[in-house]
Image (tube, rainbow, N blue to C red; front, side, top):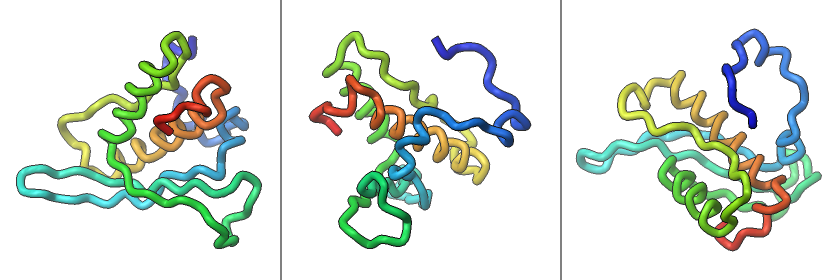
Length: 130
């Protein structure tokens, strides 16, 4: 497994290429906070460009707004649809401090990593729920 201690911030700075970098046409960006009555949540923009296109092309790509609960739903659905496959981990739910800029940015990175890992996963990339 990939368990163990998380890499130190210094190690992250000199990061070596990861397998999910192959899916860098998928990005999670623009965290926006919303308040609906007592409910506050952060949405993220998820862009999927055609693989191999550069950032300047305006050719068709999908851009959707998703919140953490949507990623959580996807994670759970992948586990149901592909029982036995190793579904990439998703960041934990966080009851407090989840609107601090540092937390939002860290979660954005983790969600992006999750979705990229799913995209390159041979058993998951064909799932209907994607």
